[in-house]
Image (cartoon, rainbow, N blue to C red; front, side, top):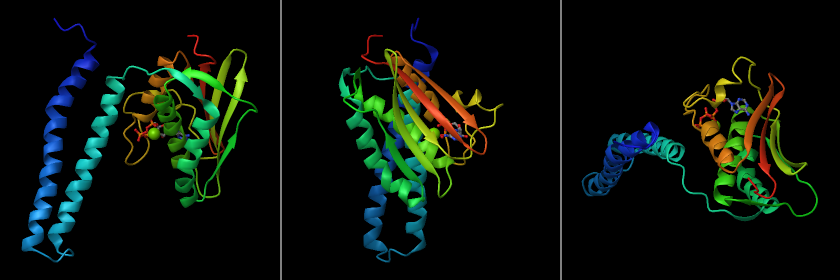
Length: 227
Ligand SMILES: Nc1ncnc2c1ncn2[C@@H]1O[C@H](COP(=O)(O)OP(=O)(O)OP(=O)(O)O)[C@@H](O)[C@H]1O
Ligand SMILES: [Mg+2]
């Protein structure tokens, strides 16, 4: 009898039955493209746009499977001392061009002094990145996203505030449901993954929103990882 939770069994099945053939397909499309070059040197030929479409659909499927596996089989946390100020500054530097392209300002408002917590820096960065991506997707040109930190007693809050479209009050609880999305091209995995990462750190994730005015996502973490 398999003692694992159902979702992990499903994930193992997907990893094996979907991911392997998917990767083989990606490799074979690449080989096909290389071999075709000898037969059809004209890169503008219709067949290349068909191949590009196949490659891009395979990539979306691969991203979806990777996200699902991340949700279903969370990796062991690698806990270390994390300098939150550096982590968030790096993230802002990484995201600034993407925000700039859309005409959205990305600001950092961090407390003074060092903010050090026990966390898995890769996972924590991934969690905040998901929130910044959601904020960017919801914020029109001219808007602002602010990443803030606040010390709340023994806890540390990381806030991602946007001036975007907001979320209707009857939707706010559903946004954490697996596969719930209101975005074309969305998979509805971002918030469930983010909540899972934060909870594994002994923290919590909540959203507050004012439709038409914006949304604030709030990660609350045990400040020194004493969970
Ligand atoms: N900051 C935000 N402002 C407005 N709506 C939001 C915000 N964050 C999340 N949402 C809503 O919650 C839904 C679920 O978010 P979630 O990140 O889980 O999935 P997604 O962004 O649709 O897809 P992905 O898996 O690519 O992240 C979004 O489709 C969006 O409608
Ligand atoms: Mg998302």
